[in-house]
Image (cartoon, rainbow, N blue to C red; front, side, top):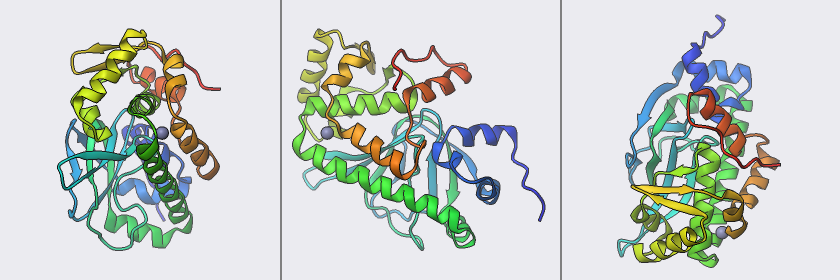
Amino acid sequence: MQPTIISPRLRERIASNNLLSALKPEDLAIVAPSLQEWEGDAGARLYQPGDEVRFVYFPCGPSLVSFVVELEDGLTVETALIGREGAVGGIVSQGRLPAFARSEVQFPGPFLRLSTADLEEFETRSPSLRHLFARYADCMLAQVFQSVACNAVHTIEQRTVKWLLAAIDRTGDHDVPLTQEQLAAMMGVGRSYVSRVIQTLKRRHLLETRRGGVRVRDLDRLEALSCGCNDALRRHFDQVLAGVYPTLEESSAQKAEAGGKRPGSRMKA
Ligand SMILES: [Zn+2]
């Protein structure tokens, strides 16, 4: 068999998705020739409920996608946030299945995508590839479990802070380009609730508001206000897929390498 040549550009993009980076070299050689580059704009919908899932999307670098469930009364609630640690689309499904939730790009950026038909074939060829993605699916399920509990019990302030911290860990950037309307739509509450939370955090000098988003000023103090849901998920990832859950220092380092802004000040132990 001819060795697979992976272009430096593709290699760089693969390196900015932790799940793809966790593939064994022989599995990467199977997958790489079928990966397509894709750019996601903010607000772009990967899938609507009922859509046929034809591609698995791997967010690269700062790209972030939310799974959002729309309820009958028009309220929306976010159930999972996926960034560089994961993938969106039928990662372990057999056959092409309809999407259940809406998946929407929250932070724009690069993606790699792979057709589900190709993935299915590759998984039959490689047990280790199938195994890795099954482990990711377990982590994804853990995130949904944690989200159910968090949405039911934790305050809007805790959930807002949790979301900001999860985004910053994945992007390496203290600027969170998300409006209060967008945050409210993810929390499943009216804008005035989120607005109150943001104003309180602002008064305490934890963040400042910017046009179209917020900038976090004091990550450590903000972290103290968050519920433990991000940490619980991180611990599960570390047990099941060590090294795949993003850390701020890793995201910041990649951002700096890509010519971005200065790395964040908070470093995780
Ligand atoms: Zn929580």
